[in-house]
Length: 170
Image 1 (tube, helix red, strand yellow):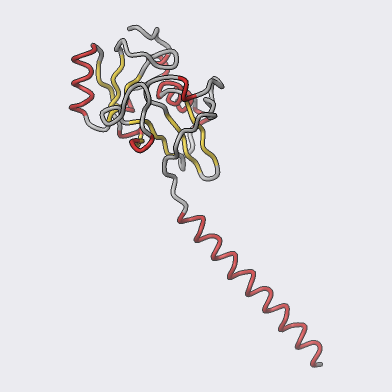
Image 2 (cartoon, rainbow, N blue to C red):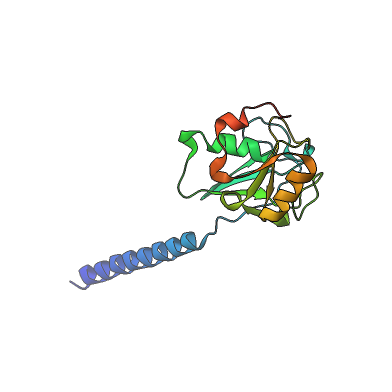
């Protein structure tokens, strides 16, 4: 009889320990933030495979739980995102704030929420390829670039595939 109680007690301890460890693991995953990450010299664009840091202008990234997709430009990222099969509710999109960063080498300390950014399209600024979308955290800074370089200011929700498929020099 004592053997039966001892075996039952051991099983109960193992089950309780497993449940406690599982609960701790869930809390650790809940606390995982989906913040932006730095770009590295060896990073390749998720769409075209080109080395991201070889090009000037703002870059983009889609951060999801367990995966990060990096893009050589904001336009590449948004073009990918606008495909219906790529919409994930838990994903966070980030772009460089070019109001606080150098065009030739954007600073990863200034990655902002892409859905809240202001975009300038139609300038002569050089990017990786295709349409160049300069991204900014502040509307006034975006409007200044648009007036200096030519172009227009758009919000995230105004960007569609038709815009991204236009020739780079609008």
